[in-house]
Structure formats: C-alpha cells, structure tokens
Image (cartoon, rainbow, N blue to C red; front, top):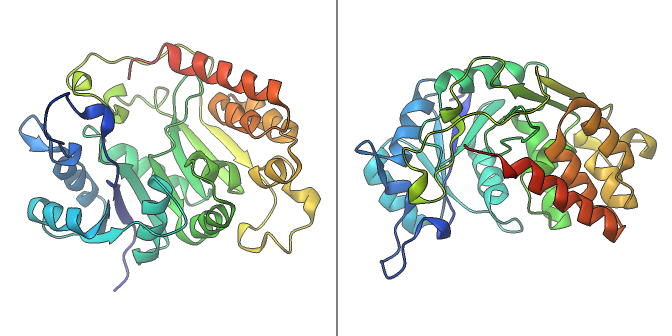
Length: 291
C-alpha cells in the first residue's frame, strides 16, 4: 500500500545532555511534557498529516519499549555506514512507501503539524525543505524531502563517511529554507529539549537579517553525480569536498542569508584559517539563540 507522505521520528540518540549526575539513564523520548511522553506528542502531530509513521529507534530493544507507548508505527534500526540522525533517516527512508517524507527529532515536543504541512508543500518544487531562523540558523533535523533524491544524497554521504545532517541540504540540487518567523509560527515549534532546564523555558526568535524564504537551486541530477559534468557541481557540497575550495558554495549561502550552511562550507576548506572562521561564524549564530 502506498501513502501520500511518510512521517519519521528520529529517536536513536543517547540524550547525554539530558542526564542528571548520579541518576540512572533516562530515555528522553519517554520523558513526559505536560504529562505526555515526547515521542507520543510528536507521533500524534505526525498522524495529523500521515497514516504511515516510521520511528528510527536506533536499536530493536528500544523499538520494543517505544511500541508500548505509540502502538501503530513502523520501527527501524540504524543502518550501517552512517552515524547519528543520518543513519536513522536513511533507514526510515528505505522503509517509506511514499515519494515524500517529513522527519522530526524526538526532542521537539512542540512541533506543529501546520509547519510540517507547509514544508511538505515545498517538496513540489524542492528536494529538501527545512525551517530557518532570522539569523541564518537552519533547523536541519526538521526536514521534508523527496525520498529518491534524499536517498541518493545519503548513500553518497555514506560512502564518504560524512556525519552531519546539513550535508543533505548542501548536497541536494534544490533546497528551500522556510522563514518561520515571517510566516507567523510560534518559535516554540522548533524548541529542542536538550536539557531538562529547556522544558517550559521562555523562547523568542533571534535577531537577524533574514526576511523571507531562502531558495537554493543548483543544476545537477543527484541520482547521476558520476555522469554530471564536473563544472555543474560548483556551489554544492560535492564540489567543495572534492576540491577543498568552498568559495562557490560559500557565495551562494552568504548571498541568501543561509549563514549556518556557509559556516559548514568553510569547515570543509583545505585552509585551516578558514576553518577557524567557520567556528567563529557558528559561535555568532548560536550565541543569541533562545530557542
């Protein structure tokens, strides 16, 4: 049976920052927010947009525990050759029976089905869609994708040993970043619960120059990178990691305000001083975040 869209929950991490000294390990996914486990809150939002929810649980042992909480979902374990959310995402995409999928990390208990629907609409024209904040920070783990394109990128990343989920945005031909402040979404919808102190905290948007959606369009077929003329890969992750020259990719992101992606491009430079600049830029982006 096919589905219009797959909903994916990424829940394979160890939640190290969520732990308290001297306490037995606590699975963040099961921690209650307003009396409801985080994983169940997100599951219910995804069920508003999809009847096919896949949970990337990291291991089958955790899947058995989660099944008692959410019930009707498909569970997948991490796939070999990738680590972190990339591994869970690729495994879930292989289990997806739709052309479109939308993924949310398990520690975003206030995520909104309305935002996810907005992102899904973007996949009519773009391979990858995520929210962006006014200061250029991209919430890369909240992501709507065209399934086949995303699998092609992730398999390539798997072969290269890459680990960052933003590489999916940098490696896809067409990317849309939705300015969620401009569209009137409550900033709470993308709050990450990394520590227990994050629960219930006051949140606000950071200041920044972005005032509208960001569109990045590159002219290559990600499913046939080997057959793509090399020059057409300029401005993408593939050009940067092959040459160590991030400038074309950097220019694209800076000209549109995707400052976090710009910093990641600089991190792949062959120049050590440019790597230092990347770290400074990331520090600036995260410094005033109250989300």
